[in-house]
Image 1: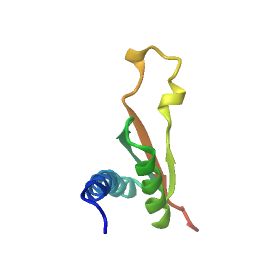
Image 2: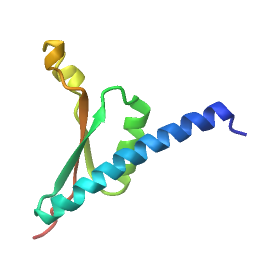
Image 3: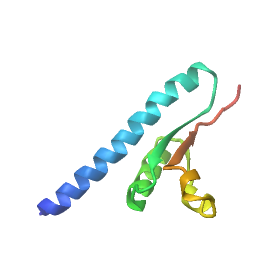
Length: 98
């Protein structure tokens, strides 16, 4: 049986993943209206890797191409006050035959 600590951890992870997916979905609909084939949303820099991996897996299973920027590495040499507070999740969907 799963422990209460494990259940709490899994619930928090699931909530975070669902919040990100909901934000992406809110951004997908306007992108479709504009004829675009991609959307994005910010995620906190401190989002754990296991959540990022699970999010990518779930979005990939839905057919999206997923990229998460790693601004921590890109901005490592910048002054701290000029660094971003967020990474960005980018998703694309196939343009298919138009």
